[in-house]
Length: 306
Image: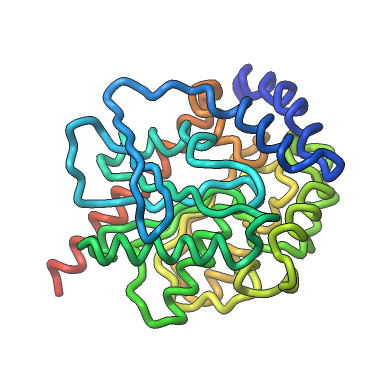
């Protein structure tokens, strides 16, 4: 572990105190935005806002590029906080390192818009990309934390509706069990410097609304996973939802899905957001970019062989 990796958790613990059920959602949103939105756009990157299927989306790309390929990235935040701006440390790096468009929906948040609003928005953006001429083979769906769970919910919804699937799915610290039944929820509660079990339970209730915690639509761990495209899962060893990633990987492999699991010792939930501050985070984001490039090349090779 680097020196930065030893220091950063102390700064995160201040944000952790704000992400508690007793703190109003509006305050949580403001404090998380203040903590995560200060990163300037790197030289060589461009961004703009687009309306896709009625959903406001941020588009990130390499300046002067006109990419054919696209990453549909769903940001985390427990379905309650977060925005395209809070996750730009990750998304802009993916754009620069893959030479792809990175589309980040500003999907509706709970509690104002409970499940299935976020999923409905993700579906609308996917269909708008397809209607705009994007091939499913040219799209990778990605996301972190709740966005990782939402990425899987989106792809499962597409599969169940008989629609074309993306080339691959890449997830960071995916939250796939809103019932919070993993042993790590309590076992790592003191070790994760960002998320607490109480926070997860509160956000789960706000997002689910009338849905059960084990409803496969919002907790993809409880869905059948057969037929999914290749899946990448990143997880830190200190995460409260460490077991979400481990159980997802085991179930996906049992269903015949090609899965790549990357575990980062000593690191915490969604540490990729510290890219630019934490060397390990920059390396992890670069590994996701490599996964995307390899997935597209492999898909291109399969199409050529056919």
